Image (cartoon, rainbow, N blue to C red):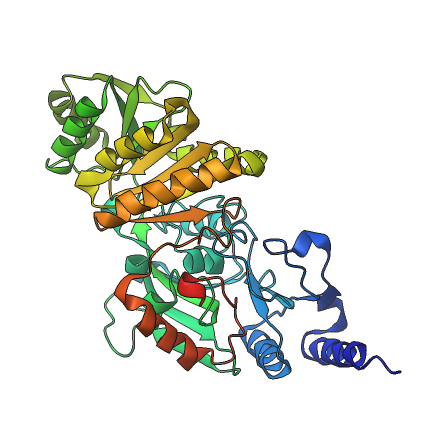
Length: 429
């Protein structure tokens, strides 16, 4: 009896090869698995037109598509319901236009953040973004995961830095929105819609960003508090002050939770930074104030790396709450954890916290459920980053709130066949 499934697969593979070249279509290996699901093919187009054509073919053939950039966050979100084709943006890695006089740049989705920053630095500029693993993370992946760090308190979140985007939709359409100027309000705000959608609405092929000048100098100051109340008092004073810091975070390491570290980044001229430090010292007189290494701003990445070194015994959680409630929420987590040595925490002053918790899987699920209930009851949210505790008993995203019906309607409008990352996003979208 003929193997019709094999024949159909071979036909699709041949059509993919005709679109992008035989050398750019390969069988997926175990290293290409997504949350344990094994895809069939890996396809790497070299242009957004090729990518759109591949996506259209996959959509018509009923293949589930997993977009992939640097692969640094493929384990974020729920496991996909299906995974047939990995659509790689590795060959879409060009910086298309840097209009340095207008402080804008147009870049393809497969360009790494580090490569972009190195090019911009030649003109004394930067994308004011500190995402995880910049040497590997691609622009498209960073946008899809909505991954931004501590610089957002001064320069805004990704949605504020993004001014234009091009998306490949499952029907083969290339949809563009926004423009190349910093002030652009015409049309549907597709950039904000695609940011953080985890590639479930379309595949980002290029983006346009607003830029900022590189600072002349940068100094990191760390204040050391001996108890939660002192750290909360200092954080409140800093948030209410006239200090022009570029970043502000709180660290609570597992190895010594008797101390709470508050890091502050100042950027500018030597005289300006000196004045800022003097003001900080007056606000933080009840703590120990010292100059620190800039590596403290990698603390969030360190937690993720520690988790990846042994994911079977840990979980990384992302907390979102009001900035004024952040430390109180962390204190609640400590109480739930019952063991202060079981968790490490990095909290951005914008109310976002990254938490590494250690323990057995069932115990971690239980703790995460309790903490999610506690934080959601006060209007916050808790997301699991990495799939070590995600499963039928624990969703990666938590409660979608009242927006789920609208989100599903948008998904149906843009991806009616659920071709892109099926089941990975909020509410199983």
